[in-house]
Image (cartoon, rainbow, N blue to C red):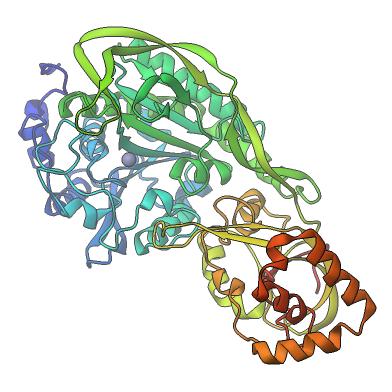
Amino acid sequence: MPVKIPGGLPPSMVTAHPELTTVAESSRWKRTGRYDEISRLCPAFEKAFPGKVRSFNFGETPEGRAMIGLAVSQDGVFDAAHAHSEHRPVVFVQGGIHPGEIDGKDAGFWLLREMLEGRMLPGVLSKITVVFIPVFNIDGHERISIANRPNQIGPEEMGWRTTAQNINLNRDYTKADAPEMVAMLRLLANWDPILYIDLHVTDGAEFQHDVSILVDPSQNGPEPLKGMAHAFHMELMERLTAKSRLPLWFYPNFRENDDPASGVDVIQFSPRFSNGYWGVRNRLGMLVETHSWKDYATRVHCTVDVLAAAFEMSARDGVRWLSTVSALEDASRNLAGHVIPLTFGVTDKSIPYDFQGVEYVRVPSEVSGALKTVYDKTKPAVWRIPVFNDYRVDLAVKAPLGGYIVETAYAGGMKEKLKLHKIHYEALPRTLAATEVEVFRATQVRYAAESFEGRTMVKVEGDWAVEKRPLHAGSLFIPIAQANARLLMQLLEPKAEDSLMAWGLFNAIFEQKEMMEDYVAESVAMEMLENSEIKSAFEKKLREDTAFAESPRQRLDFFYRRHGSYDERRNLYPVYRIAKNPR
Ligand SMILES: [Zn+2]
């Protein structure tokens, strides 16, 4: 066995393939390679291990770089169709969604080479196929600087969090705005991995724990997937502990910023995130966050330990997992009429937890004027803190009996999104006269104060209500009876936190585009007041609503909204629910 360097992985002195050594490895985990290394290494792996590795491109970044990956298996099962026909569990390993957190790239290349050369995990690659994307956000990876990520130790230079279009890919899974995300969702749809591992490095505090791992779906998921995810998660914790790691089963997200004593909120990751998204797709989504205050050698080694344990368990359990999720997909086809929880929060219930921290004090800061936290990392300390791991359902919605209808004008764009998310639909071949549907008219629209990820997010109030509307040729019918029914609801229920509505893709419907001149409204109002019902409603409102009574704009608007010229489509969501396939 090769000699171990302190805290890190053995150097490559034993490899039969020195051309597969990374810059990280040869610099003893001080530095990391650039894009030219990835584009050289992937084909070099294929060349070094013929019949066991396939290098492939799956897209192009906005700055024109090819997106590259490796498919690896001992027995040549390295295309998606072959893997599916063999019922082969596919494990998908993603590095560099946040390129400053690049441990996954160097860990993946190192571990795969060791496995292919037979020094680690013998036999595992004949039971699983590994798809490895060394760097998802390649343009961000090339925006390299020694100044990036001041809260992290090494490598010497590292990449930038967002894409060249300033998109954070780990918020983009449902809206899929980034070209990189479009390429990734197509690749995921093709491979359909049973386990999707997304490799990061934490931000935040000083402590002893070296890695934090989440597996979705967690508390919010459907059985039996939830139980399967939990068992995998807990065994992974045990295996890492047995290797003298100090793993956390939650992300160390302090309830109050910068204050460890406030405890940790164990949030349920919504589908904008990789792990939350893959959980909603009825698969295992895993978030790995090594601790940023460990040196690069230690972090890469820790990532290798996590991957090795996950690979071994996938090789042992993957076939069983596949049959579990296939049964769940059958069940997902029968969600019609069931109440489905979509959005979650954390309650104030907690459990005490002995967090392996370091000594710290909270003292007044001359700089900020607030309290600041000063850590002494030389003095380990146990923090007995509350961990808030009890969740509540903030939004639950009854699934439609038949499915959703998307109006013709929105069908083109929606088709593209649905295909990416592996959701089936059909287009109506001819127009149907007034048909009973449920419609959603927003009664209150609150825009976020700032742009987020290039979008103006919006929170709407309102309820579905039955109405008759014509359904035009070319409208889409999206049946609820399909494997990805839960994801479909996350995307199309307007009040779900990561729905396309919430991300602002329908904001134009809230805008008033026609108007009535005030002097016209004045005379229209006089005419309308001759109607006794309108008159008493107006007077009641004047009596009961002071803001209304004091606002000339609102008072005129009262009449405009009741006039035939008012836009009946304003605030009408162009997606309906329907009780059966209208064909
Ligand atoms: Zn990250």
